[in-house]
Image 1 (cartoon, helix red, strand yellow):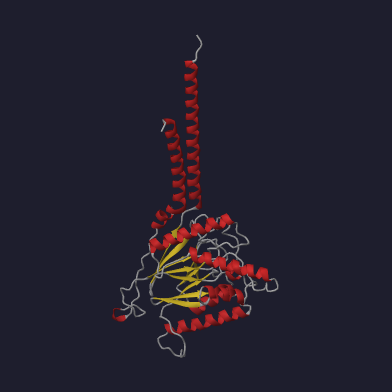
Image 2: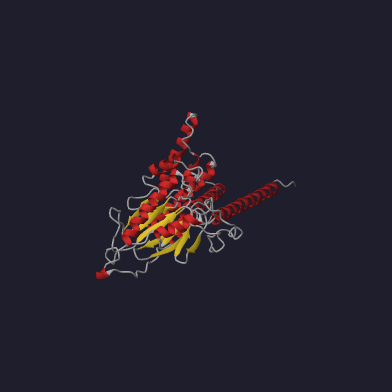
Length: 406
């Protein structure tokens, strides 16, 4: 092969390696070094029962439950999502979630609502227009199919999903059809207790806590009261008045829900995942941004949770209610909502818990890598063009020298 052709081939291979390397790093490899920095927090055990047993009767050396908590995935639907935006965000969440599962091996994963972005717009009230009703059903089924692909997991990991306002609509949009459709897909009630190794995780349908007496609200509040009675009876030593009540391990619950408990604003929130400084002092609206004061106090009085985990705001925050009930707001897991998504790693025992935050690759970092690769590509092309220009000039001089007139 002529030397000239070899130079062209080497230049083409170098360009392909540069572009392919940047793409492979940004779309696959980058998640590994970032998530490898994350570690499960260690729990300090300090409450033991007599006879060398934990307070729930388990052996004292029983390991804590490892729970991964994320929120607000907002899978785009057919109405408001551009196809490239949808493809990009879903690929990012899939790679981040699958990498985290492979590296961290959680026992249970909680997603705190707003799984879908357009579940609130799918309605059964399209019976008169059959084509639209069929299309709405197809869109919902497609959203569910994509969710199952992105958040697939092995049998060793349990996936627990909570309901959010984008899944069934805000209170004024919510109806039985949307709620039951959501519960059917995830094969569970939206308000229940999940018990893992003697630890009670209370799942709350916070969308239905408006307190206005709507049928769904009444049903959810009735179920919450029943669950609170069972938990309180389980914590009592006497058991008086608890006949026929379902019993749970005698530990205060960890409460998970989509809406945060009532707080005025995010003014007291700090950290790299908090809301932007210009938005932290914006006042929250009750029953829209946060739960109402009455609903928040009712939940705290009924359950006395040792920890509350919530979503909805897309930003991180830590709040202490009544000086004894800590709440952690979990940021969005979707790069569409923030530059630095994250999730919570929770190590939970019956007597204690510990939390750590795991950040995902920043969108700005990925863009910088692509821009740097593009700049290098342009420099290589420019250098190659200059070399070609010099080569042509040299050849021209040589040819003119050979044909110089006498």
